[in-house]
Image 1 (cartoon, helix red, strand yellow):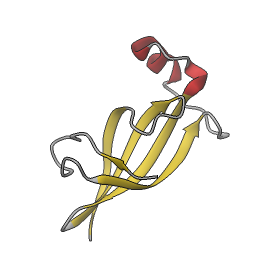
Image 2 (image 1 turned 180 degrees about the vertical axis):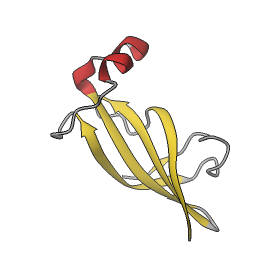
Image 3 (image 1 turned 30 degrees about the vertical axis):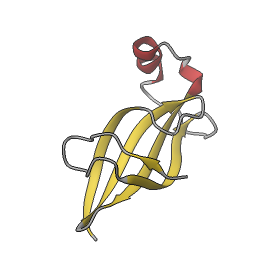
Length: 88
């Protein structure tokens, strides 16, 4: 699945597509999300519905690794974080 990115820390080009999306924690995995209760309190979605996802954005010069939280099958979600930048 590919999704268009929001603005992420002013670095990743706006409107880029996130590709190779993988669920790394939470619902559907054996790894719990440490902050699930905080996410539930902040966004009013049940703690057991959250997933932590990762994906790659390819820019003209760099590749960006992005992590974020999503609930109930959402492709886009909340609290995007830039976790790595590599030469293309």
